[in-house]
Each structure stands twice: as C-alpha cells, then as structure tokens.
Image 1 (cartoon, rainbow, N blue to C red):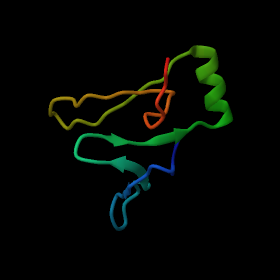
Image 2 (image 1 turned 135 degrees about the horizontal axis):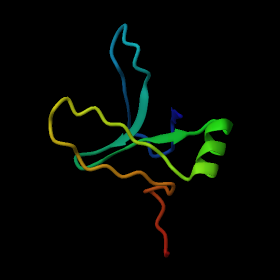
Image 3 (image 1 turned 120 degrees about the vertical axis):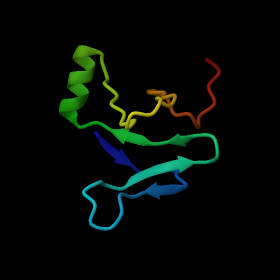
Image 4 (image 1 turned 90 degrees about the horizontal axis):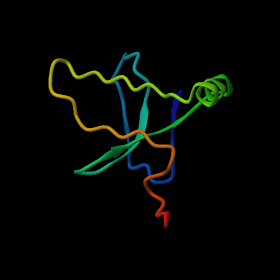
Length: 80
C-alpha cells in the first residue's frame, strides 16, 4: 500500500531530514487526521480473495488511540 495525495489534503507529515520514513499526505484538524492509500494490483487481488485488511499501530507502550479503516471517503456525504 502507498499513501497518496487527495483533494481535501491540508498537510504532509514527514519523517524529517535523513529519515527513511516516506511523506504522508493527510487532512488534519484538531479532531481527526485522515490519510488515503492505494493498493497495488497484487494487493487488490489478495484483499478480494481473503477479504481482510490488517492494521498495525505503533503505540510505544501508551494506550491505543481510536482507529477507523474504511473503503468509503469520509468527505462524501452518503444517504445510505
């Protein structure tokens, strides 16, 4: 998976000078940070066949923060 830019993006989180961490385009305000990711064709096939997505978080021994994984954009209002 690869993080991608999107129209609602308000900032880019970076790993800093000399970091191996790649830039992370994001929408961020006082309440929420949203990122958008794209899957390669092999990743799409694996998700289609297995129906699972794994989420790993680094919490450094502190309590976990709430997370939400979705296939729908949080910026689009849906009537469903």
